[in-house]
Length: 269
Ligand code: HPA
Image 1 (cartoon, rainbow, N blue to C red):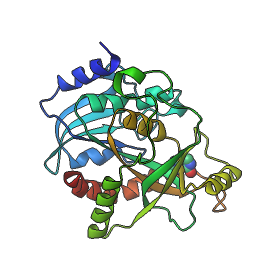
Image 2: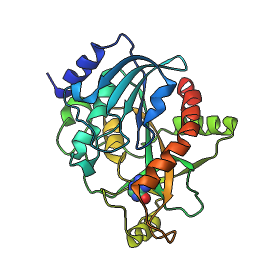
Image 3: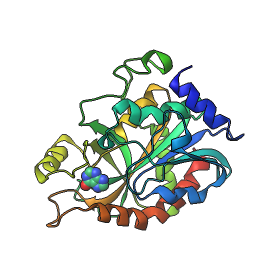
Image 4: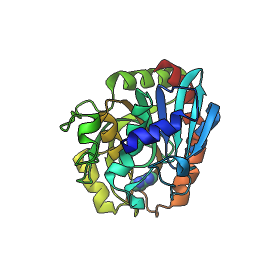
């Protein structure tokens, strides 16, 4: 049996809930599981093929239950390539979610704002991404098992979901920026020269996750929505250093806004 199937079977054995929507929560955004009526709480270390996250602010738990009445899975914590995981390992949970029946997946992450019109604390809907990594999770693993090899990425972030999120934001009076997310490996923050390069290439925000997950999610046919929380202005914009502390603190500050938005949005998807 495949690794994906083994993990999916394990999760399904822990709950009778069959989620259609999944959310992956990034740094400092982890307590969004508060918005859920939880049916099962599963430690990543118990799920075959999952890892224990080493990034601070990542709970390393899968919650299955209901958000605003909609069956949902929340992945609190993700596997970053900067932790030493391969792109395929970072994407693994997307395949497992598809296997348990999830159709739509929402990614949240912390990011540095490259677009100087943005402010710290802003939320950005990811319209598109730039893979600055030069690697892909589908170079070999899973290729024949769950999807085609040459995956179309022209509408990776599902336009209909983007539209629904924008509508929810408007109705709730929550400002939602829209833009392009560029992924660097990290874990060091970028240099000012790298940020100038990212801006020239068309990035509005930069971070250290999400891209391999989205490629994997597209590969297995999931619909995708992505939110970046601008936890800081990217390197070189302000005359001050960037700290992980600042990233976590802004994440905490924005969490409430994010939580309200997701709570409203999930049943609309
Ligand atoms: N760069 C990369 N990743 C990040 C940043 C940043 O400035 N802030 C939060 N995650």
